[in-house]
Image 1: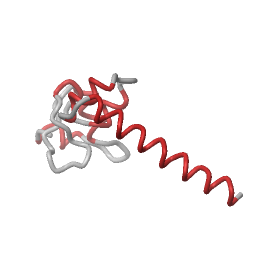
Image 2 (image 1 turned 90 degrees about the vertical axis):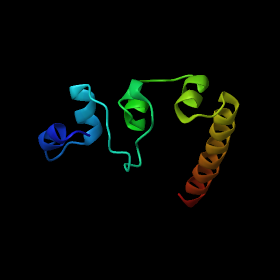
Image 3 (image 1 turned 180 degrees about the horizontal axis):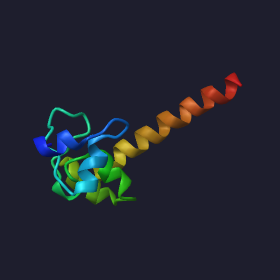
Image 4 (image 1 turned 60 degrees about the horizontal axis):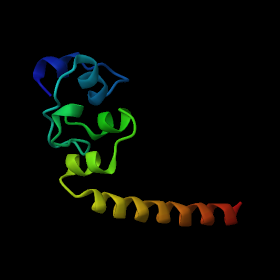
Length: 91
């Protein structure tokens, strides 16, 4: 983030909202949400908020193949399903 913008960030807001609002690229590479993708102001949260992306588009952002993204997606769905079953049995 440039210094001008960081001075404008107010309480109860976030850098990704401000970068999106001002259409500026985030330069805070230490942020855990930072990605090297100018299309989304270098922010994974802005990328997620833009709506559904194809597996190919997600792979391009993170520098992996669409098949790798598909593998990750299946693993996450399986883990979430297991956690949901655990929650359901504890109710």
